[in-house]
Image (cartoon, rainbow, N blue to C red; front, side, top):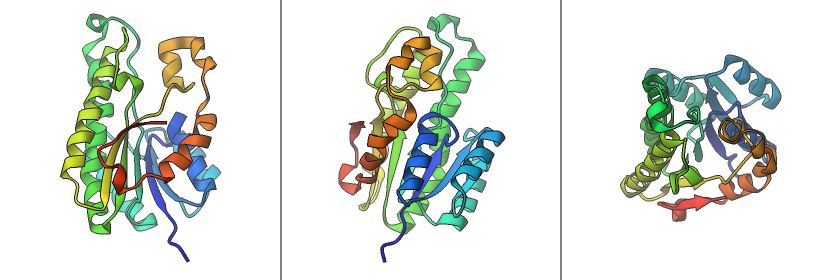
Length: 227
C-alpha cells in the first residue's frame, strides 16, 4: 500500500492556508499546521480531526518554530510538501506613511518567518530524501502596485530567496515560488475592499490548486509558478 503523503502548512487557520488544509485532508493527506490564533487552531483541529497535528505558533519566533517541527515530526513524519503561506499585508498607504512597527511586522512574518520554517524543515526533508517547498509569493512579487510597497518588497524577496534555495538543495528536493493568483481573502480585502468579491474565494481556488500542488516534484525545482 502506498505511503500516506504528508503536508505541513503555515498560516493554516485562514484564507489559502485553511483551504489547502481542508482540500489536502479530503484527498487523504496527513497534515501538520500552525498559526498564531489559538481559537483558529482549535477550529481546524476540531474540523479535520486525527491523525493530523496543529499547534499555535508565531513563525517569527524561531524557538516556537523549532518546537512545532519536533511535534509535527513525531506526529506525521517528515513532510513531502511544505506550504509556507503565513503572511501579513500592510495597511494600504504611501510608503512614507507606513509606521516603522508595521513595516517591521510585515518583514518579520513574510520573510523571517519563512526563513525560520525553512531552517528547521529543510534538514528533515534532506534526511527523508525527498520533499517540495512551496513558498507563497504573489502577483505583487513579480509586479507592483501603489500603497502595498512593504508587502511587494517581501514577496519580491521570497522570489529571490526561493531561487537561491533551489540552487542549494540536494537531488530529490525542490523549492518553488508560487503566485496563487487573485483570491478573495481577508488580506486582499484589506487592500481592495469589496472589489475583492469579484474573485474566487479560497475554497473555490483550492479545488484547482490542491491537485496542482499534489503534482509538484523535484523536476519543478526553481520554478516561479502560478495557479
